[in-house]
Image 1 (tube, rainbow, N blue to C red):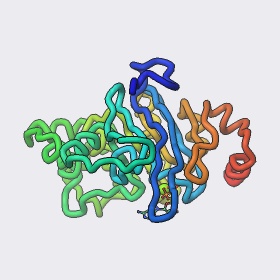
Image 2: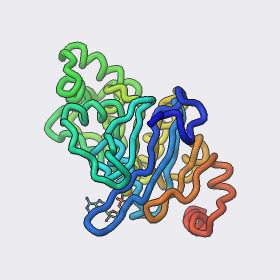
Image 3: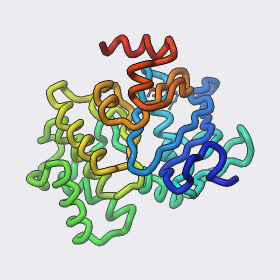
Length: 265
Ligand code: ADP
Ligand code: MG
């Protein structure tokens, strides 16, 4: 299949292409044919009620939850091959999956830091173990990533000594250090006390301003309206609406989205 067709306005500008992703857990179909494209340097925000499949979609994109069917393309390269419609994907070599995860980075709701490692060791870990970068060079890359998230002074701190907002910024630095082509954020602020949300959103705004390609699952509707180039509304394992924020957030066309947005007004 040619990646530049169908549905592709400009082949080279697409960072990540997602086609017809299907995923079930037992008898329950959690993702029911999800497709979307993200262009390089753009921000896609995904909104949707709890249980609509947002986390599962992100987990499919970096193979934490291998999809049952569908395609994921990084640029013009297809990762994860579908044999035929709705046939199970072949198991993939671990090496290939690690490579995919270093190209599609993920930031988790609960930070997932190593509790027994210092801040800088957390950030260096993937560089050394996944990318095979020597320690000295890894520590330079990690220091630069920590500087970007405003934690230059915290190299030797242990995660437990940090606030939730600082821990999440370490999570972001750890992912930035890997220099992925696309960053997935799964509700990065929803585990934080309200007063700590702003510092994490500020880091994400700076990344967006620096043209980082990002997919952000969030309940921060105001953030999505300001920062997203494209807003996706998911419900029941499907994309219900997709478009610029002025359209999707300000003039929702479905009753389901209008109802969802009412909660945030
Ligand atoms: P969201 O992130 O939009 O809240 P999720 O993708 O986490 O939604 O979950 C969608 C549905 O899939 C939920 O009903 C959830 O219970 C189910 N689900 C998610 N992960 C698993 C799993 N590993 N095993 C079984 N069911 C799962
Ligand atoms: Mg979720």
